[in-house]
Amino acid sequence: MEEERSSSGLDINFAVILHNFINAAKRLIWIALILALAVGAFRYYRLDSSYQPVYSSSVVFSVQASYASTTDIGTRSNWLDSSAAATLSQTFPYIIRSENTKMLLELELGKSIPANSITATSTADAGLFTMTATAYSPQDAFDIMNAAITIYPQAASSILGDTQIHIINIPLEPPTTPDNANNAFSSALTFAAITFVVCVLVIFLLSLTRKTVHAAEDLRKLVNLKCLAYIPAVKLKKRTTKANLTLTITNPRVSSAFNESIRNLRVRMQKILKERDAKILLVTSTLPNEGKTTVSVNLALSLASEGKRVILIDGDLRKQSLKASVGLDAPSDGLVEILSGNAKNFRLLNVPNSTLLLLSGDETTDRPQPLLDTPRLRQVLELLRSKLDYIIIDTPPAGILSDAATFAKYADATLYVVRQDLASTAQILNSIQTLAASDVELIGCVLNQTQAGTNRYGYGSKYHSGYGYKYYGSYNSKGRSRYDEAADAADELTREISETASSEEEE
Image (cartoon, rainbow, N blue to C red; front, side):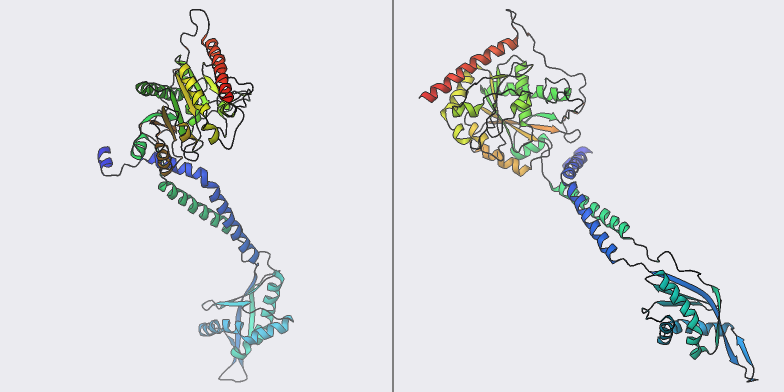
């Protein structure tokens, strides 16, 4: 069944669709809320400002008419048979709405009344009549009704002759509740809800049109690059102010699935770099926040855990962030200080709980290209190449800055990090094409921050026991730990890099 669905082009991953929609909703839901509130507020203002309460007062009565007997003109009789009731029923509304009635009402009230302020209905079979007076105030409605009762016999005399009204039901005081309720608030809520639902539907349709990367197949179709690892999304909850929030394999709070994905990446990277006799690895991405720094740090830590001599270089001269990623805050000099000749107390840093060396500083620059084009950068990298097993350079995003392409001139290979459902396929393709134009050796991609169920080969949560990262053979035959040896290596490399920078300055 799956094969048929795939072959017919109907292979729909509903988890991906839901994931896209949730991510789009997180970014755009505030717009939907603002629009819904704006529409609701406008609707409320329009209805509330135009609302005018209307009050009504009604009376139910019957009518009797007199006539002169045809046998005895001196005798008058009252009648209200079915025929007479039908006649009264037909004429009653016209009498109430006539100009004569209105004139008599105004004379009775001593003031003018609005048109259509009195309505009339009748029930011919029962001989009952209902007269209703409406006005914008309870007292006016009550007064108009009483005045209409008073003047009705006179108004009807020209048509029906002498009439008598028998009151059946009459209010004793003005009404207290308006006939028309102010529904501005409920109408505003309805319009706001409809607007919000429409906006959510638009967000859903937009999420369907958004083309991003979710699985290795997407990367292969897009740029024909092999996906070397899926790295699951990890969220560390801050339990206390002293909680370790660094997303590294040395943090015991990080999930085993994350550790396993880094281990798999390390194994594959070692094989690829060995085949190419490569040491300098460039790590970049399309956009910020794709996790390239996290990948760089953990790949370097994983390589160091195997006893390899590794240094991690902060190649973002505009924003030095590697120290914070490994929990360091000590002052230090980085590439900006070294390449500009301003290094005063330069020293390579040791990453806590690791033999990994770190080259990251505090000074930044908005114009890194002149520094990256100096011969000093090549000399420093060649010195590190001769002393270490791996040099990993964490660069700015290649999709928005050219720094990665400049660093690529000195690198042996490049690893491209793609965060699931962030950069569009067009952005990724343009970025990789820009790198390819600089003769970059792209060896593969990493799909980062994958969500469960959105890709076919994700790690999910099946790893519970965890592998952990320990430094096997932590002490050599002389009883010195690998941390001691890493500190010695850092001191030696610090001295040699300083000498290289000084000699270049003298020349």
